[in-house]
Length: 169
Image (cartoon, rainbow, N blue to C red; front, side, top):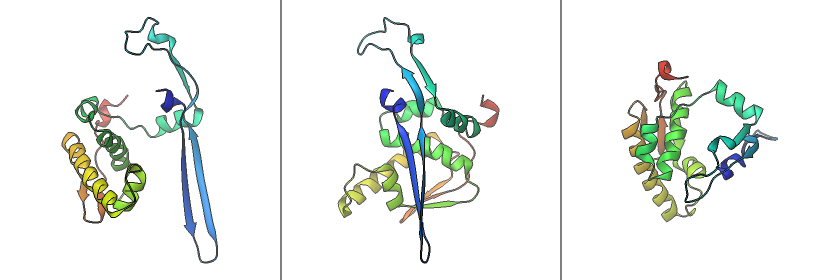
């Protein structure tokens, strides 16, 4: 949690035109402040209520404007696979806000989720195999997700949210 609340998420994009290059980006700080109390390997002596986190205004607004509820049963089922957990959280948001099908190449997929894999034919193959297995696990716990695994990537289709709208807060 310390790393999460200390994180800043940066996105960058680049658009090449005939004679010009346009580059942009955005930075998002998750928490303005945090004060966490815990005792590793022991039951907490200090009440957890003493811990607090102040989310940044921008992050809070994004959470409220575009919520992504996750099913705790799915998280429990996927907890032994960090890649499956990452893909579940990512896919849940991505497919529920899609307006039309989206094709994602394996290269782009590896850039987003496979930083620890070598940029070699063997590393790409290993990542692809692990990602396919993780996506199958995600599909098993989130059957509403409409997704196709292709030779050159993944095709996502607009899908119902994993948590139906009537169950959202």
